[in-house]
Image (cartoon, rainbow, N blue to C red; front, side, top):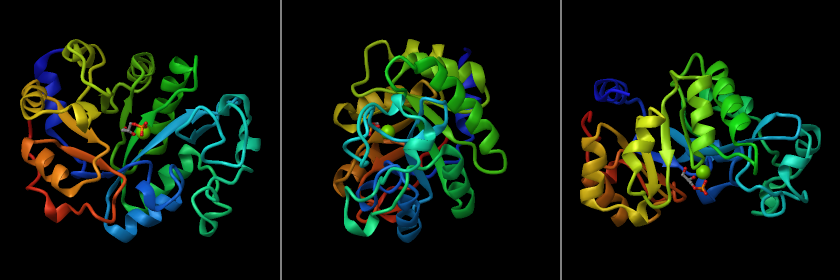
Length: 261
Ligand code: G3P
Ligand code: MG
């Protein structure tokens, strides 16, 4: 990958500064369509969510490998067909007002993005051992589903999944996701032809952000819930701040959007 191509692809940047983590942060059951309602309420124009595959390869939204924490189901998500997953309650765990909330398909999430004018960071979150097929099917599915709207930004902690996504839908933007940025981050993002690097804000520093941006990449920091920390990261030039607190982090409290890298 040549530097010039990186710069050209990342200079056209359609995404806003603030991103709602897992659709609606902590204001709605994570990775459900109820999160879009919260985004609309608080003026958010971008969501991050986690996408994976059912046993019969339906693309749907869920964070964990297992069902217990955020649904009334049991066991590994990858062991269930979509018909079983679609019947689960994915909202009652957060409160009775969310009872009956369902796990959404990727197609339903795309519809809500289009209806509400919201951009998406689709985090490819493969179930164990399913990295390549999940990367392939999420990327090809996203390319079909997001034809008339801002193209989604794909990301993953999984190198294998992101490589498969690159091969399946080369034109979709990709961001490599790390918790702590490793020493060989530049090699990795170049191999995967990424336009952005996503990392836990805990491990970011002003010099590191500057180094990443000087390489022609955008930076996403997760999960930032403190307004003062969000302001600091924005001043450093962090392009996207992913938050659970869409009720307390507002666009007008941050510095002007970063210039093209
Ligand atoms: O993509 C940023 C963030 O969502 C990564 O962590 O565990 O919340 O998916 P996690
Ligand atoms: Mg995520």
